[in-house]
Length: 525
Image (tube, rainbow, N blue to C red; front, top):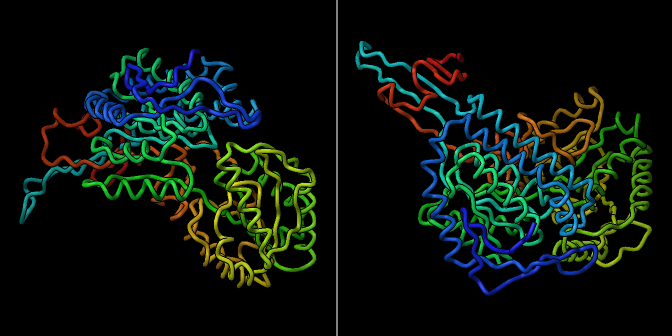
């Protein structure tokens, strides 16, 4: 495919701005062609207005036809073949196998959303029949369902160039809801983004969708993203990235004359609690699994286990030794881009200089340019509570072991946690019963509770929740992965005493779509 580096605005291309930037191969430390154009204000404005102009036509398209469109996206993505994978690998240093796994994830979630909207019950249709004879006042006929909010701005994530980017759940769930999308491509993988965007455009043409429902703009500067979120035609935005970046755009969304929902997933520390029964029975297996989770993808997951807590004793000491040995065996690998590597290197240097932290393991092999070695630090519960920065995410293969004196210290640490995407508990059923207070605190603090497992790796399914209280996300009620993600881009609309023939089909008395509805308080089809 011949990449142009232009903005893709509906059916046309535009390279109006003279300012350009290059993608970079982090492994080879060299620029990649072509040059990509920074989006001009006029191009952002055109993309947002096109999306707004296409909204009414797109929202009226039947769920079955929208499902056909999503399936066409999956087919066009697969038809890209190795070109998509090879460009993603070149721009991120991800192995080809990892890129292929991301593509498979795209196929899974896109087809899931197609099936989900075809079935139709996601709209939460509710009907309360009227009663004109009710005394002292007649009861009106009241019906409601979820309807799309309007054009959505989507920000690609640096660490998932295929699966949380142009083709990610944010884009697909917005399309599924009936919302046009304007993607802000991530500047670390603009070539991958352009290839993926062209697959979406082919699916639009194949299925006869309104041309303005999809655009993609490039930008290395923060101004491009801020202008997109601030645009009056954008109705919602979704972001996966750093706390600083997410918070800045969140402020833009809320400072608009008409604020919009801004759904940011910003990472977390993802604590792991090792209860006595589990350590006693399988310290070696837990240590091996932990090191694997810590170093997977060079630690560049928002679900990386950044804190591990255990109670002092022989079993905990053995785990510490095993984990330190495992970390030492990890060969440094290239990080996604210079910005992430620079932040990681600075964070490690700062931690190495702290007097309250013990270094219990680090990669034996030296890290090369752009590479990250793995590090494992240790402290006590008192040391952790005295240093709140250890509760913050450091993006990369680094974690801190925390020694606690007893169950009450587990609870105290958990109470000090900020919102997190996940928490993992390793133990027996007896352990869980004995540490019920800890589990109750974690239920308030995180979005996903994991038993005898690790947070890295998400099952793409209807039940998954990838979210959590702030600062893990800007809204703990919503997920950025799984079919519930569609609810970010829909809002309830209520129809009172409306003529049946003019109601949305989901609310018509005959239920022509055959969906599950709440009728007079009972679930029925």
